[in-house]
Length: 244
Image (cartoon, rainbow, N blue to C red; front, side):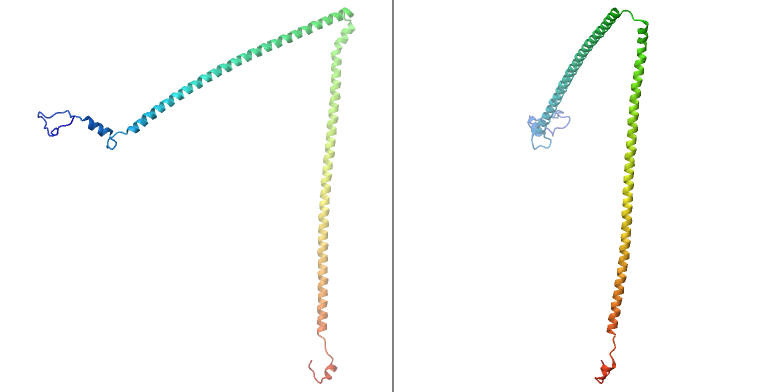
């Protein structure tokens, strides 16, 4: 509905004046949804925002679903592990009970066999005499004596081996010490011989230099003597002059 031209010319209190402003829907939509309007809405941006919100909501729901599935799988694994532990414990208990039963049967069988053997011995030889009782009582003492002898022999062998080891170690250390001293003596001798050779070579060099100096001095003196010769006056007399 278009506004009349004289709408804004109405005066307050007159009949034409109205507090309700007529609205033009077409102009309003154009003003709001027009692309080049100053107060227009970004429809594409709104659509993108709605799409992003929907995508975010879907992502959160997917994450919640994945977390729920993970928790469910974790609970199932824990239950399976607990069940396996319980079954393994039950199997171990059964094996332990079975092993204990077998061991108990073996011990009972051994006790029965020992009693039967004692009864057979008693039936065959009769009751034990006093001497046999005394010998039976002395058997632990004899066993202890034999055990002590074995221990003493073993300890003697250990002591012998330890003494031999210490002796070998001492001989080895003595050999190493003698080798070190021999190398030290050889090194000192080499150093002494080197110093003597160096000193002898230096003395020989000095002697040769002195002899060379003397020879050079003699050669210089001989050259000077040969150069500073004098001609006899008779040689100049034949030329009637004194000049050379």
